Length: 191
Image 1 (cartoon, rainbow, N blue to C red):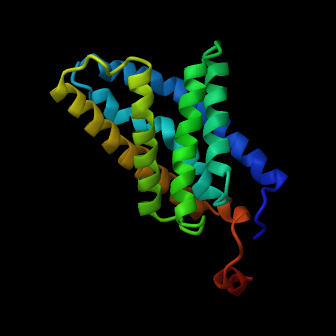
Image 2: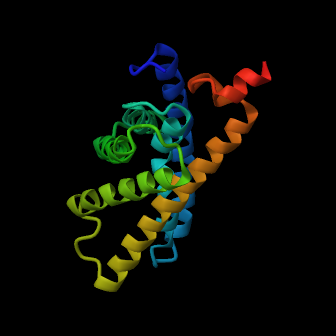
Image 3: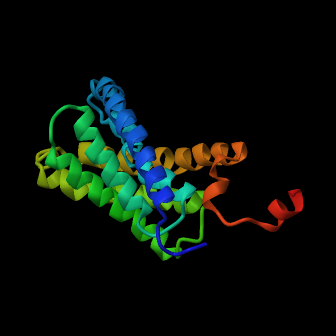
């Protein structure tokens, strides 16, 4: 498998990003609907906004794919919502970089559920300083802040990590993702 990105891999990554840009905008309705509880249960759904990076990497395990997918999804999200939103772009870039760090630690060789969950976890951690910087969390009571952070981290692990892993595993079973990984001995045996 070549180290650099091929045009086909970039195009598939952008396609994944476009799909997630649409999902992200639809997901906003879910997030807002759960937000009415006032107990930060919406944070249990927040991991959906990190999924583009994890899904793209699990399909095409190469350096740069997670950043490209998440940033393109964030850019696409601003296009779909009809307004340019720099905050969304900053979040997307940091989420993609956070995922990329985990994938780099594992040298882009592991597509395990644990790696996907770690990437989701670190992406959720990366969003917290931005929430403080944008003023979302500065005046939240301690117990409420603890709920917020714990629910966000759980969502990163479960929704962004585990759900992404199972989505790609299902795609693997269809054979669609074989184009982006080297052939195994069983592939040759099946010929």
